[in-house]
Image 1 (cartoon, protein in one colour):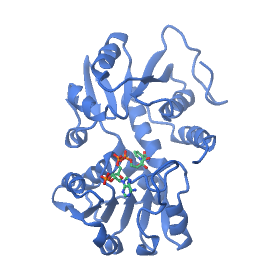
Image 2 (cartoon, protein in one colour):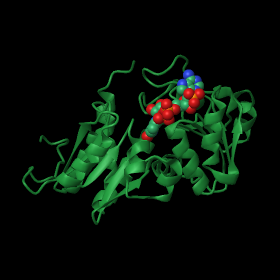
Image 3 (tube, helix red, strand yellow):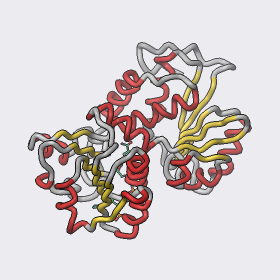
Length: 295
Ligand SMILES: NC(=O)c1ccc[n+]([C@@H]2O[C@H](COP(=O)([O-])OP(=O)(O)OC[C@H]3O[C@@H](n4cnc5c(N)ncnc54)[C@H](OP(=O)(O)O)[C@@H]3O)[C@@H](O)[C@H]2O)c1
């Protein structure tokens, strides 16, 4: 395998190289190999990372293969996250609450299912905005997999009010429940009031994403004010129209790159027991994204 960067300190691939991988479908565009190979390169670990296209329904066979082949870490992406939660031998609290696993860790012959998305969001928030959600009010727009991870993590980390705004109300209700007593549903017509009162506003819809749905603003940027923090979970493009509009109004606004980075950093540490080389991972993923056309 070729080096991912000039600083690649990994020994050459040999019979003792350990293998980790991501499974998903489609998986060809996954950024996990970029992130994790940069991490192995920067730490000099004799590990490598690849991607396996695993069709829906084939995850049980893939996990048998993982066990048989001694694969030492597996990232799990769509469409397998919920099925992986059912197949893991043990689940962390977050993975159990979410019913979704994005990282499998072999421990003493058993597979532990983790969900590092929510923790990755919190780490990214600390990294980008220097804040935690403890004692803060949060609005999450969207109620899909990313929104659910953010709601669950914010609830567990001490947010005092989490309002979920989604066009499909039963999905909003299911996501809000993940925050326990501090979670609530706000219908889109009332979103402006909830947003005005929030410390943190998170876009967890694909509105504004390259190749995403029509429209480029998940909510009106005018509903936000200076003093609030906005996070757009989209990372392609790095600068969404919503982020640009918010910053033009003087509002602190950050994209989704850090969540992507820190969920992978958490997976790296779970597998290796080594602190993740976040700066090297960020350099690699920024280069990979810069090479992607924006639709
Ligand atoms: N930074 C990261 O690490 C990271 C990780 C995961 C995802 N993401 C990003 O987060 C976004 C959501 O991903 P996901 O996996 O949660 O997707 P998902 O499970 O498909 O959920 C999408 C959510 O967005 C809503 N939505 C979709 N199109 C919409 C539209 N035109 N107007 C209003 N709402 C709309 C959906 O509403 P309904 O329920 O009504 O259908 C749903 O709640 C994507 O942009 C993805 O790239 C980022």
